[in-house]
Amino acid sequence: EKIWLEKAKNQELIGLREKKNGKYGVINPNGKVLIDIKYEGIKHLGKGYYAATEGEKWVIMNKQNQIVLDRGFDRIEDLYGDYSKVCVGHLEGLLKTPDTLLMEPIYDRVQSGSWPFIDAQKDSIVWQYHRYDRTFQKSNIKPTKIFYTYPFNPKNPLCDGYQCIVKHSGIGYGVVD
Image 1: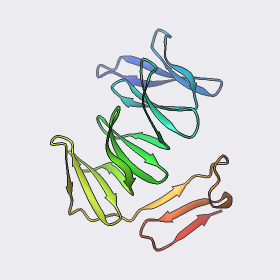
Image 2: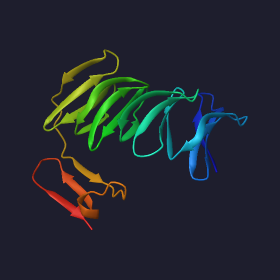
Image 3: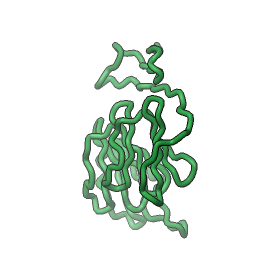
Image 4: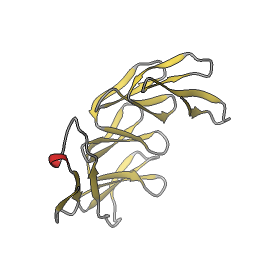
């Protein structure tokens, strides 16, 4: 199974995500392995960087097959441009890809806001990171109600085998059978 993964602006193929025996890696169009085909998951983050996992934790790698950041993140997601959301449990932080942690994963929500901002919410306060000025400022944006879902993981069961749902406002907790 080969899946298109990374394209240049001219839409020429740069790399493929390849799956062999349930493991993923990255190869170039000529078949040369860029990132070993040994990972349980791999995501393109842009500009030649990838998030990869061999288990429960994610790392960031370059296309020379080198780990450039290993901070024990539970999840890494590409945000627009050079930024990635990093997560530990249900808490989120902001990374300037590949290795500059701008916000520790202590926020309830991190997401792209109105350009050029990235919004980070903690409780009822929203902070904004300005992509051009590289500054943080407290915002007057109204905070959103946040719900977390924890997918059941047999290696690390939560709530005695139930899927947990936590309401951010602190009003209560619930589970889904």
